[in-house]
Image (cartoon, rainbow, N blue to C red; front, side, top):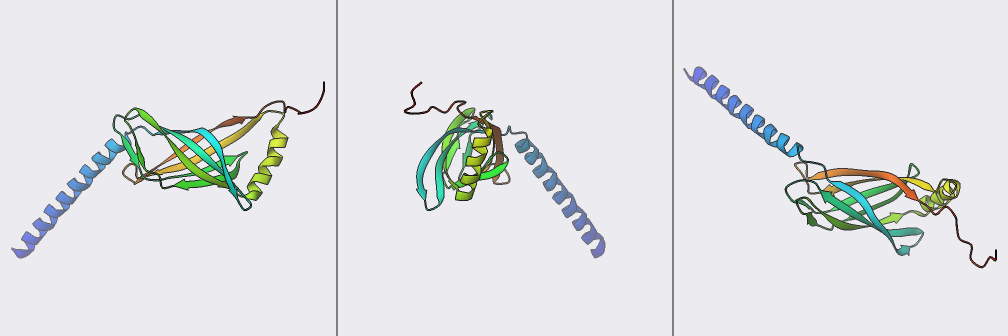
Length: 170
C-alpha cells in the first residue's frame, strides 16, 4: 500500500508541476504578444574628447506601442557605420516609457581613434552619394520576462553634397 500511495503522490506532483509549467507558458505567451519598442536616433551631440577617443552623446527616442508602461534601468548601444563598428556606449539611466508614448534617453558613446580614422576615409569615398549607412543595435535593461529587450534601427545618414569653401571668390 505504501508503494501505491507513493506512486499516486508522484503522479499528483507530476500533474501539478505540468499544470504550473503550462500556466507559466501561457503567461509568457501573453508577454510575447507585446509589441516591440521602437528606438531611433533623435540626435547626436559632441562631448569633450578623452585622450585619443572621440565622445558623443547619442539621444535615443524610445516609443512604446503597448497599452502598458515600460520601465527600464539601463541602456547599452553599438553604432555601426559603413558596416564597421564605430561607437559603443552605456548608461545606467532609468525611467519609464508611458503607454502609447515615447521618451528620449541620452547615451554617451566612445569612438576609438582607429574607428574615427577609418570612417574619415569612408566619408571621403562616399561623398559622391552623400549617404552613410548605419545600424544601431542596443538593449534596454529591465524590460520584459527576460529582464531586457533588444532593439535595432538602421538607415542612412545624409551628408551635404557640396562642401562649402570659405574665402574662395567665384
